[in-house]
Image (cartoon, rainbow, N blue to C red; front, side):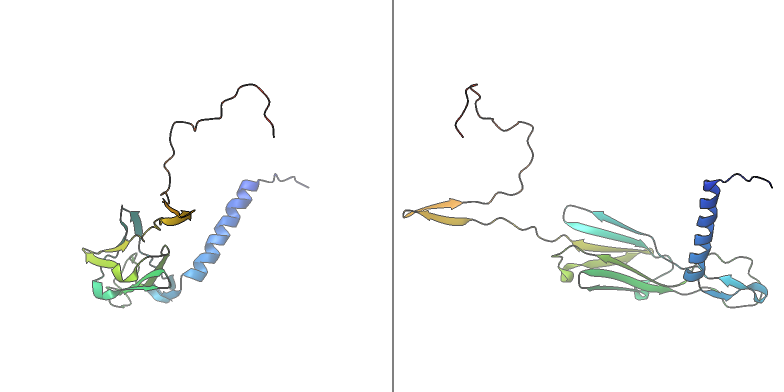
Amino acid sequence: MALIRWEPVRELHTMQNEMNRLFSTFLDSPRAGANGRQAPMRRWIPAMDVVATDDHFVLRADLPGLTEKDVNIEIEDNVLTISGQRKAEHEERKEGYYRLERSSGAFTRSLTLPEGVDAEAVQAGFDNGVLEVRIPKPEQHRPRKVQISLGGETKTIEGAETAEPTDTPEPAAADTGEPTAA
C-alpha cells in the first residue's frame, strides 16, 4: 500500500474549480454555438461607479452600444433601479464567426438610497455610452431652539451641531491631594 501525502491547498483549489463550474452552469444559459454545439451565453452586468460630492451622490454606469431609450431608471421604496437591454449586433448564421465575446441581453442593477432622498430631484444624463445619475444628498436634521422658562424668566437653549473633536483636552478638576467627601 502506497502512502499519498494529503495537500489541503490542492483540495481547496479543486473545490473552488467545482464551485465556479457549478455557478457558471446556473448563471449562464446555453444557446446554440458553432457546429450545433452548446456555447455558454455570458451575462452582461455593466460597470458602475458611485462617488459622493458635497451635495450629491453621482452614479456613473458604462453602457456602450446603448441609447437613452434602451435604459430605464426607477426609484421605488428608496431603491434606485437601472435596467435595460443590449441587443446582439450580429445576425444568427451557421458559419462565419470565429469568436463572440461581447455580451448582450437584459441587465438590472439596484442600489439602496439613504433615507430622506428626494426622488423628484434625481437627475440623469446620457453621453457617449455613459449614464450619469445625480442624487441629491438628504437634508441633515438641524437642531432646534427650545424655550425654557424659569420663575417667569425665559432662556433660550440652542442645540449644537455635531461637535468637532479638539486637540486640547477638557479641563480636569483641580487635584489638591486631599480626600473628598462622596
